[in-house]
Image (tube, rainbow, N blue to C red):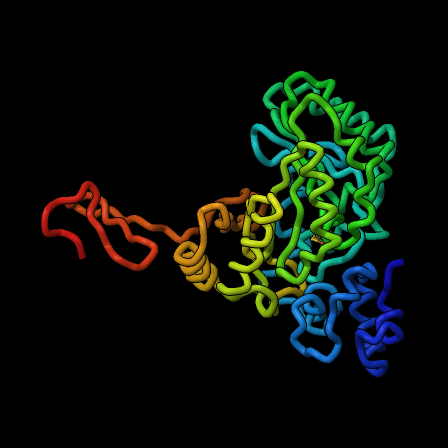
Length: 346
Ligand code: SF4
């Protein structure tokens, strides 16, 4: 069962007198939570990190001057419906724009939801033809929306169609389903991922409390089928902008056999400025994380350059060059020369 804006008071997640203002938010942006997510929220905690991600807030009605409807330029790089071809060796394929939950900071919040469409047969065939005609496409990232909301039969058909294209070597699914709607990770869904090509699943989690036993079991069903799982997280003010929380999150993911892949700086999406800190704050958190935790627990901190210029790592940077060579910083803040020369250590 899912909850919409009108259900939030009855579910005890917001006070009844707030429903009017939240309906105004829901008129602009999709609102939906799964029961699994709702059960994690502590309504008595005004700063609950799960509520902050999924329960709408009137802060979303404010748009700052630099925020955009399509901050990462999907439209600009979409040659045919459902395909985004921003990088040379890979494309996004978006078979559906529906999600099990609607995250309040979502970078595609103005494209996804009931207003969005599921790609029909003809559009999917056109998308496959686009991929087939371009031998440089090595990887297809199936995203949306959430592709794990499709039926196993449809997922299997997509995997089969892509696997038949010789130059496609890697099929990657991006999904929040194992974390927010774990019972959908059924044996049939896992069977649908089976192919001789490399299939990866990238899950999305931002706070260690999202990694419930049910979520862990769902992820284990995927990894036990031999499918590698990575994770992506968004650095969100008031949710996980704290080194101890990030450490807990990434340690828990690695212990579930999930490799933290990306930590995204939040995109310039309309109505989300309350979630965005400064890049310097993110760099300081990544430095602290490097000091605290194993290399396995280190995602790459990335920014999607506004306007569709792609994703790049944004630090922190551990080295600097001057006329004497390289100066390298260690994770404890010490400074060193490379190559080392006697008497030059800071
Ligand atoms: S699951 Fe992903 S695409 Fe869907 S609302 Fe959340 S961030 Fe956006």
